[in-house]
View (tube, protein in one colour):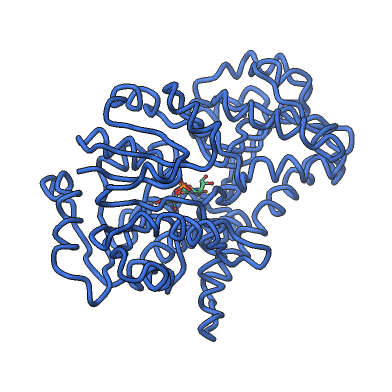
Length: 443
Ligand code: UGA
């Protein structure tokens, strides 16, 4: 079966490579010629663990193109284009509709067009209207986590499929055939209507963001009363109804999905004249969290960060990615610079460092250009620092040479924005004269 994929970003590329690995002939189309050329050379334009290897391994079943006509004869076309938020927080659907318009002339009425892009309620219906009788539209939201996206592709916790009420039975059967690998693995399938499928995606991301915001808000109380948020989260998480995931307090959630999806859900409530109370609070708490953390740092330096140098450990929005979108680490860098501090940043992922360097170069007239320096070496990052800030939750920070760091820094202070340093290490560090502050922890 020939399968088409529109968009070779994080979602499209994983979908294309994943399906090729499952044995399908895949044509992946993108309007960006430079991306296509890189992919043809076997080089993914994004960093994702294992992607390059899998791409090269399945090259004979993968065809990359920037000619939309090459999608002709694809029995199923997955639309995996971006749905960025506009200035009001609403999802911008221009890429989705233009993809649909572009493929319409190639369709014969027997194809299935699958929307994998995260789209607000009503979008699948609108795309079906746009395509008329030329194809059947199916909603199939994705639940891939950056950094472990390939693992998530091959081992999903569920597959959600939303169909139109008048879709013939063969459309369902064909979708199940494509995902036969997951059926055989007994992955649960949620077969539903378009609107429910669309909302499952927004609800899942907002709920996860809400868990984090809840624990972050609670961390502020924990700190005041002398409790430890990690223990509280553990005590809560052992209740299987609550679960222990996404209860790590920190400097807040970022990325290409949570911020845009929470905002888009807020917008959808408003469009239907409902008050989005929990999504709104989720967003507000997240916005406050960085300021709350900054104030903690400021207090340690008597309220004045001017002239101070900070080693910022972690740059991307989470570990093992080069994605900087809505990165709390970078937002914190900006806030520190605004306070008159100088920031030296490091991330284990080379691509993340490269992308921040590009950002610094591009923004020659902004704060970044003079306040932020990216180092390729951890020791250089720490040299002369007045404080070390952990902004991304790499467990690897625990295995670093803190004794050597102690000799490099000007002032031994750690602000662990991810509570990632293990308790035993923290105790040792404090005994060796380090000042340590986490999020909702007492030392
Ligand atoms: C998220 C969802 O987890 C995926 O299921 C979904 O498919 C994806 O969005 C999407 O919509 O495409 P992702 O953006 O890759 O995945 O990142 P997460 O691992 O969910 O982390 C998001 C943010 O929350 C990060 O900034 C992370 O540092 C933060 N986080 C996560 C916490 O602060 N605490 C936690 O306990 C967990």
